[in-house]
Amino acid sequence: MSVGLELITRGRQEQSPRVLLYSPPKIGKTGWAAQIPDVVFIASEQGTQEFDVSRVPIINKCEGHGPNHKCGWLQFQAWLDFIITKPHEFNALAIDTLDWLESVLFSHLIATCPKRRPTIVECHGGFSKAYDIAVDEWRRVASKLDRISLE
Image (tube, rainbow, N blue to C red; front, side):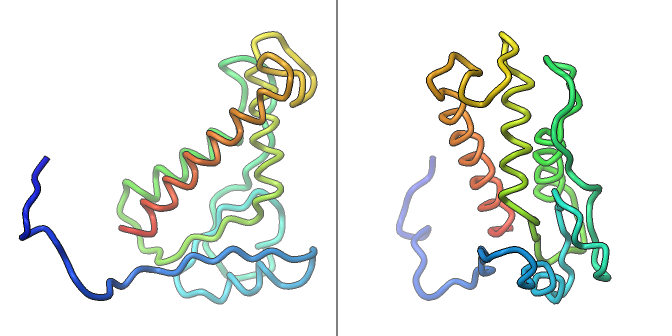
């Protein structure tokens, strides 16, 4: 790792803003984000179809069980990785919506539970341990979003 005075920077550095919109349903969050030039939506709910925007296929809850289950959470992760690593024309990313995406994550955790537990509280050892795994997953997402905004 290289260190030295020549690596120290000063002054304001431009960075794309990050915005989290939180409100009751049908207040206009998707419409607001649709106005951002060159935005691409990663949508986990129907809602962008009435707007002229770029979007990836809808991210659905996971189906099946075990390592070969059909998994919306892994699909979501793959789209983030694609946006980070591949050239594209987009200047903004909108994730619509996080609360639905959380249910996709929970369905993934239930689907990957070794003992086929039916609820998020019971899977991965019980005692709500799956929530700890979920927090780690959200941290990975936040890290990827940091990489997207810094590129």
